[in-house]
Image (cartoon, rainbow, N blue to C red; front, side, top):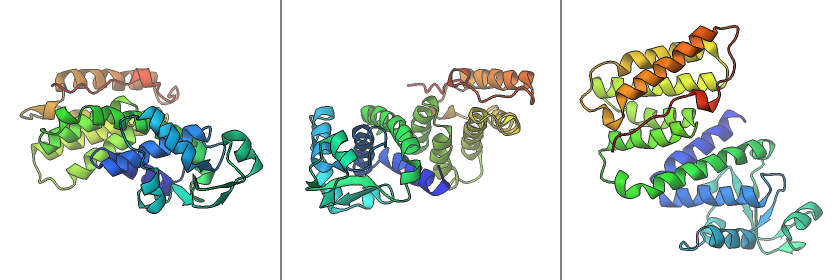
Length: 264
């Protein structure tokens, strides 16, 4: 997946944490992926997506008509066509009539990466729904504490790059001090495990050590993180990578990476 598409997807999931319209757009995209068999079939009729939404989210009105009117929420990802001539393959797969009243299909720039994007969107949908379910708990939180809680949901789902991006949005505007150092430590640990999942020994070892050093510095409340446990488990994971060595480095398994535990 190229950088442009990855950025669009990451921006969508991070905005979906706070913006209901973006959340609906992401969930709509996830339903499109399911209906198109993981992106193996191009166009999906709006009516089919409306029915899928009604089954999955019976207490929420389908946003399909709104997305058909304005493509801004799915810009560069899905495209709406009011009159779509379906291919024979699409008609066989989704029972589209030859001329459907309206359909969504992947944007041209997304098409080469559609299957990979759909796999990622499926994970994003689970994460977004998990955050939405905790809204009553998250809403009263101080912004940095909430950011750490949301980053923990990403981190624990294996979305280390997304956790890094979420925290960095808050980190850049902070003045120098304990909060900025603490967030930077979490960012570096997230980046370290992103490298570990890709099998990059140097990136994993160096970033994890930098992050550990910052999280060991004094901080008033650790922004809700169970810091002692996290430090202990991240240090253990790093030591296992070091013990294995550069030549034996392999892409880390998800189960080899600790979780972020946020204290309630």
